[in-house]
Image 1 (cartoon, helix red, strand yellow):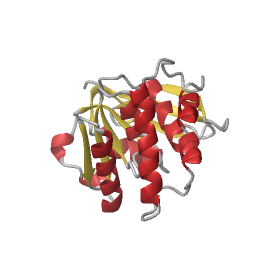
Image 2 (cartoon, rainbow, N blue to C red):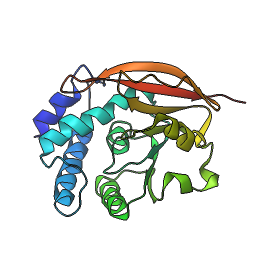
Image 3 (cartoon, rainbow, N blue to C red):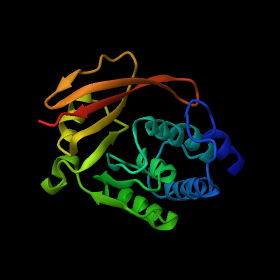
Amino acid sequence: MQGTILHILRDPKLTLDSELSSLVESRIQLYLDLLVKWNKKINLTAEKDPDIILKRHVFDSLQYSRALKPGFRVMDIGSGAGFPGIPLKIIFPEMALVLVESQRKRCSFMETVVRELGLDQTEVINVRAEDIPAERESQFDAVIFRAVSDLKQCLTLGGRFVAPGGRLIVKKPPDEIPIQQESNLSLKDDISITSYQGLVSSLLIYEKCFT
């Protein structure tokens, strides 16, 4: 499986650094092992095969690396099984990460992953996005969403946590017309990305103005 992990990470569609460390490989392997184990007890992903999880969920998560920098402070809202936040933390170990999830069992899984993988500067909070404490507002260089249905709601929920000059990042189908402006967030980039299976989607990057 580890040979497969490196092969996937070196896929040119990801545009990652080709000199990936063995620690990245081993952490992704352990993450997959834990996910498969916990999937037998609680429903984390519909897919149960680690190879499919790697090619679908981990691969898709790493597409967000195009819009992030290693030292960013990042909030991942609606993390579920840790996507996209945990794979991004594995390749960007300097990143400070807050994983937000409303379901307690999923938080327990992510807390186990954080502990077992030795991911420092990583916090899991069990709360609905609407109820995240006000002291978290304007604290993050990036707020990210993955499994979402309503773009406007993402901008409303996540925008208050983005620091001035920071960004909110969300993946959407390419045929959906993006919102250009919402409150103090403006669409700055629309990056075409391709899944491992060849499906095209868009990575929308919104920037928060300073005023």
